[in-house]
Length: 303
Image 1: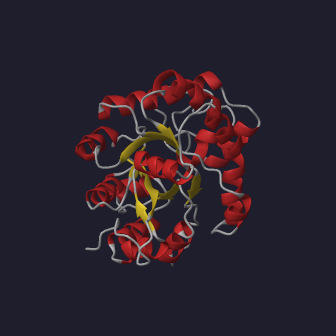
Image 2: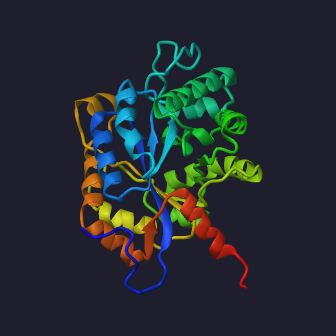
Image 3: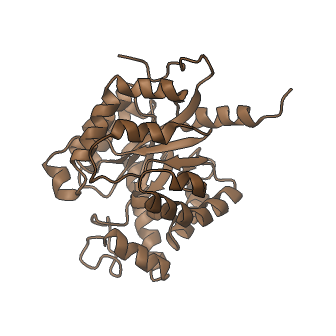
């Protein structure tokens, strides 16, 4: 099997990028696929949903791989069951859908204390199961960058994660770049909503990726190879690409509408087409620390 870290055919030094699979822990099929890809060196990061009833057992399976990829916390405030009582947001235990949540956030109608308590519980669940701080922190459906939530996230980071090496996912991208990709409106909206969060957090010195790509229409199953190539070419330093590789099972079908598209991504990342795409684009997979070091070297003044 081809090496995903092999240099490009041009001989130029490959640009390190991060490839992060979201939703680890949501269902056993997702977990099996993500662990498989990490073992093969075909992912550099995974983001974990600690609200899932499968999390404790999925965490135990992930722990042996925690030194081979960045394993982070995927804060979840939509569509799933909250870990603790949230009488205003989830009076019956289940968190609202994305549109409902975004509407509340934009109207500043979220209860900050309630959000903060749930975020704290999710971080506690990660650290208890993994025995370490998360390598990074992001949000399911990008909720970590919304009003009120972003304030909670930054406060939590400063209080509990500063100095730990944890980095944040920043979802901002230049407008022209966002408009040139699949689902341009969605990509632009995610980017615009994330800019205030990114400016503030970066201004506080909180590390994170420089660029973000990977938003797609899951209803369209054809052409993920072409989509992925569009995400990584051209690849600026500090690029993070989000993906949703997984295997569909009964647990996933009961928890989330995105099923077959996850299998399409998983098969692509297993295929020889994946390392070929990396070589064509002149990139290699890297964990955040390595990507950050390379970025510093790129930006360093000439001797």
